[in-house]
Image (cartoon, rainbow, N blue to C red; front, side):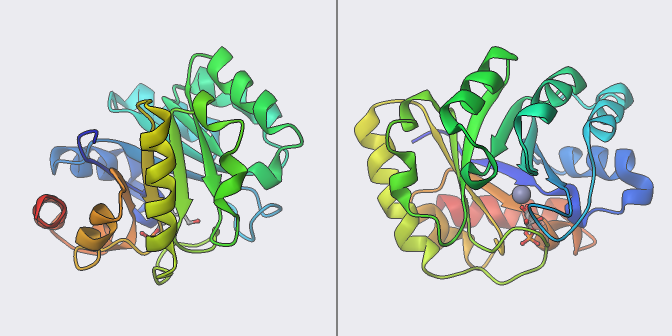
Length: 221
Ligand code: DX5
Ligand code: ZN
């Protein structure tokens, strides 16, 4: 299993002080920055784009930026995010006409590629493409908003995807996104996740380091 990664979702950060918030959460022990891109088309919300990613790089953020695209179409925006400093780019297969082509596009731009499965998207969506991925992102809420409750059926799905990743023999990360908190992260890790997105659970508390430390303790337990 790969070492655990904590990726705070800046969707729940104070956007008026974004650079400062990202500095604070990284200083508190976060590994990656999870960057939620919503277009008011694929999902019913509107957030941030490549300019904000680029601004964070210019601000001095050197940690991996984990871009989660909830946009349709996907391909047009990929080169912009690569240029803006994205490390990983994940997308929803429902938002791309040619899933394998989009994966190739992301990798061709020098980024790592991830595929995102919504709560009702079957794991078979990974057939024929898993070996070309760097990451599988399982949504444990329906995409669009922070602060929703973790959907319990995702635990079984995590186990099924973990089996597939292990059978592939490749170093593919298994990321979970939605409703992750210190009190369920232990069960989520036991089901096979190694990369943990958390928005409201971290940014909703005054002491980010305290939450992240508690999460790491639960993951290791
Ligand atoms: C939802 C986003 C998540 C979200 C997680 O569409 O992809 O990254 O911000 O927020 P919490 O941790 O609050 O569920
Ligand atoms: Zn996300």
